[in-house]
Length: 256
Image 1 (cartoon, one colour):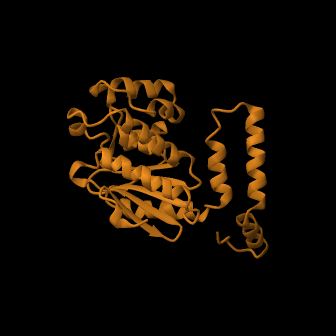
Image 2 (cartoon, rainbow, N blue to C red):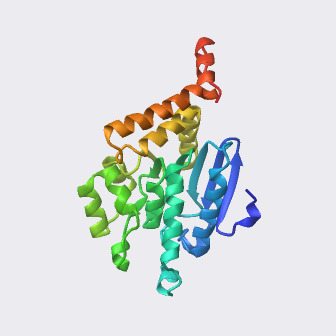
Image 3 (cartoon, rainbow, N blue to C red):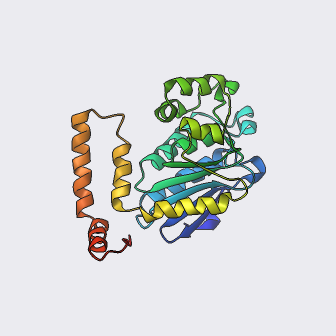
């Protein structure tokens, strides 16, 4: 990943981690055509890079992401191609063989919240502002219509999507929209502690568990059982499983 390739993203590698930072702080990381194109391009590279086990999504500046760039939308510079590339990118986050964590601070609105919904673990500050306000632009909030109900139930999903109302990070935790809260004052440190927790347990078995969970609403029991047994056989063959058993016998923590 060559940093000079990107004008709207900032990338940083750290051992098995990739920090992926949305970098349009002057626009509160609103998503324009170049950002979506660049994100899609990064994900193509990332998909093939098995040395990265965890992806961390952040927003530069005062917000995580405020969704689609309304100035671009109003100027007629966003068409259906944008939406298709965007949804392909979200599906890549959801299905890649890496765990994806995001930190929502300031605002996670529209496409910003859709992006968070495609991550595995969502972390927010208590005062963060989360909403899917697409109805205010006469639009559908993308596949937020597919994902949101899976996390918070159909009734709550209809309330948020059909009203466009915002919830705070604190309420988002209560309804299952986010998984952890961090304090606004110490969010960097607290978020890094959570990353360490997930890195410590991030074996191939964990990443295969993500693959299984991705099908939990879509397959019937028998099909899911077959899907699971194939993944479990893969886990049993993995070097991470061998390391886990070696570590158990030596009474130490595994080193993935």
